[in-house]
Length: 290
Image (tube, rainbow, N blue to C red):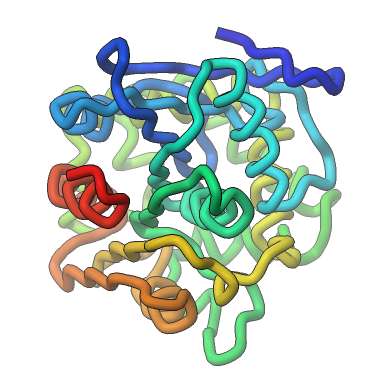
């Protein structure tokens, strides 16, 4: 569906799960359009959750919003939930969705009951964190372009997007190249691989504006401080992650007050999704909704 935000913009939104279910706002990674990821929405539905996935501005049918910050997602989520008739919610952010879940926790504390990040990125330039250390070469190049500015990043992403417009599930592992360790390659199979491919195709279906503005938002001030978050937050991280190295999860766990840290040394960026059931159980318990 497409939801009118009332400010001249629209967001493409996908809602998956049982009618009457408690809302889970799921923030997918970068790049991704608003597509169903059964590896996450299936366990959510089993727990009575109705998953709301908003396409961030510039992705698929969502109106671009150049210059947006990570913090801007909170207003969009609030507007979408208002139109869907939801008040309180829990939120989960995977990869590039992680900072956006934290923004909801920081800026919507009266509505967000609890948040979790799954291999979520930490703030760029954070004290004590070598942000690029441990990333695969593709990410080092991408975020180097982001730090250089919009023109350099757009040129990089236009070339990268060409390889994703028709990508299939069978091609995802190869397309990700040096970003996926063996544990992630082994996880990219079947329906999960197909959903990842669909997300990439959707992300670049109308250009690279969403991907560009995600990356630029990551390397600029987020618009809030993780240390100011007051709602329960869990940080889940894989020790084999080459997209968002484990130091990012460690930094978040150390700087978000009361964060519940879960480091799986054997998991990667993608295989960590296999823990969706326990992740959601912990999220609901933290929200007082077991």
